Length: 319
Image 1 (cartoon, rainbow, N blue to C red):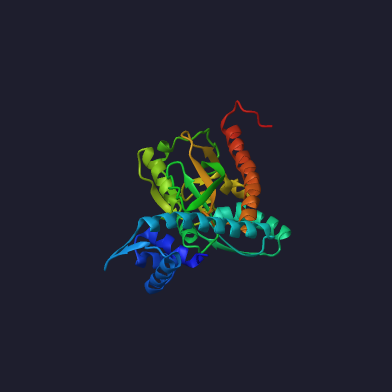
Image 2 (image 1 turned 90 degrees about the vertical axis):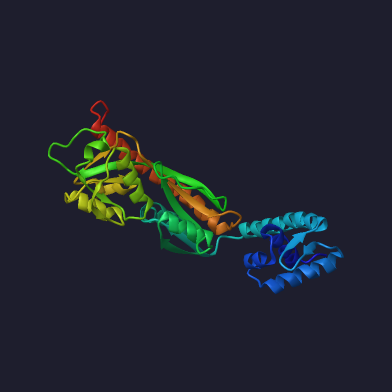
């Protein structure tokens, strides 16, 4: 019977094209991989490789065996995942998420999960989407809650299993005025205002810059805030105006503000990512809890959006 570790070495060489690259992918030394390949040739009594001083290439027998190795190793991975799925969720679970997702989406999901599966020990890292994606890619976290905007799309990597949880409108906010004002607001008319933006380097910052750029101007920045709670406090104080996602205006955050939809609709999309092929009962259970939490968030953001529609459209009932 063929040794699994030797088949893994063969598969790695077939995929990466060299012993050095195969060794790096499997976290072994190059001599160790060479020994595994030599042992595999002895086991099969076949010449599997053409070797030169600087390269290695699979023979026809090597290509044939590598194809079977892919099937065998895939089946073993499936068996491992199936066994893990059969067990009750337990053990460490690492999640990276951006701030509004932590408070409005992740915290309720973890509360539900803790009540049902106390054996799961969650660790949460506050991270913007680019950082969170990299943490998943490097297997430093199990799940990332990410977002993108219609004006700032995000590439979908084949290394991730990505599921959209909900989407929400971006709304324009300014300090409450005596007269107020009917919306939707044309961002182009806000070119003389000072703006409160998320920090430079975030997709949130880039989204506001692109929205203003599409309206024909570069915003004058009054402040940059990591969290929307601080940004809304500065808007309420009259320091500037802002674009914020509907979830940031949940509850009492909207008081003291004029909140208006934009004449050109802008939206944010929130999703959950996990590494393709990496699965466990804890990961799947949390994703299910996130979907349930997301349904509640969607109801709340739709309520916020509907409230603004009624406030800016006299023809809509205020029941």
